[in-house]
Image (cartoon, rainbow, N blue to C red; front, side, top):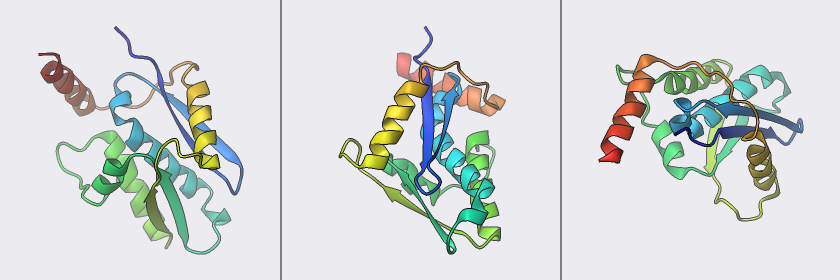
Length: 149
């Protein structure tokens, strides 16, 4: 049985830009990391528009934000983790400091509500093909196997 498509959305309030992506079933388990990696990629693409040397990434997932500080590349590192770490490394090379901040979901924060609405709409779009390593697939199947028993 296929899952309902999951969409990730980033919103840049200064440029009034939405970026959205609908994820395939394998990548869905990494949706929060994918959203943060997409945000970092957006910052890299538009870094000339950043005023100063700091940028802020907001997320509703507190545990993901906490895990970012502990991420390292080893044999179990997925492509999504690598993209996120690579984005942070490239921004550091540009002397751009990325600050992460947790926001509580469904609290009426206008920008957050816009993103939630855009994600709901994007989940009805055709699923994009995302890159995916065998290790990513293995982790998803392993999780499903242990959760189905």
